[in-house]
Image (cartoon, rainbow, N blue to C red; front, side):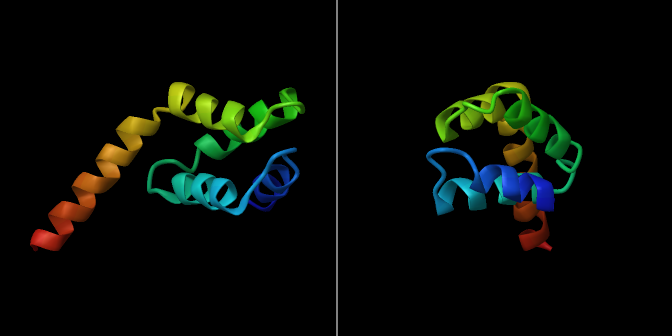
Length: 80
């Protein structure tokens, strides 16, 4: 996680919301394996901007499925 944080903070147009959003995303249960995918993308594309990285995350890592799963779990636990 520390390496990902460092990579995100070194993106040319990085900003706090970008870094916090990506970190929050990989902390969702079941997303731990996506850390390496995101790190590898940043390492392989050192010129990538935050928008490029966010596009990769939404298109290649199952972003919407993860968020939907997380929201369902939160809703279910709130009903208990």
